[in-house]
Length: 303
Image (cartoon, rainbow, N blue to C red):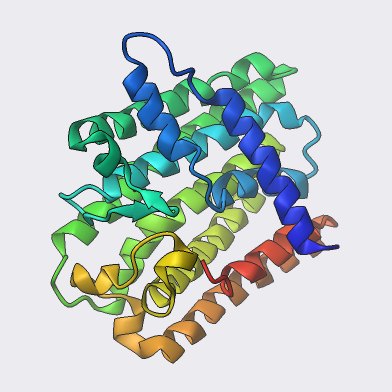
């Protein structure tokens, strides 16, 4: 398998799905559509929709049309979180994905509304999966997936982590608090993605719990690598400002353990995720080599 080639194919497929779901830029309120699409269609890794699709394939899902609305929805939710994260009230960043951030281009008010609109539109988009369900069993799977989509990004997930992150800004954090922030702020959407893929493919509760644990460790490893790249990366490669954590006086794994220590921690969490995937694959006699390689690559990525 040529991983880079397969990654490109899957990313392009996701771009096509997003383009089909994006709102048309017309009508009196077309500015909000333009602001939504400006950020949604700005590229990026498309990791979360990819994880939905690959986990669905891991569990033998065969009706991929029902997955597409959720793939678009999770990227909309992720994008809304980035728009709000970049606002002056939070990180006050001017670049994201290699271009000016939403509030710089459209103003703060429209950026706030664009984030709100993407969150709302995500559920409007995901709910279209009900119309695609082929039988009562799949219909129930869609309902369960929608429950996951509504809970993981919320107050007991991503938003909850953001709250603690904001309140503790400028304060020294110990590892348990930092892990809580990472599990909520970053891991929650990755858990959401992989759990939705598993649920839509009909995974049982035991498998679903293992997927959640696997995704949690992927998310922590992913965030630690973000910490490292904020110190070692460049604006040209990352497409966003570097030293943002230092500017905002944030405690990270790099500040706690140094770069080498942070790398070791990222490898540790990544290995836990890989071991869980291997264990589950052997027990269920299933495999997805691309998913395995994707997890391995995340901890060694350069952007």
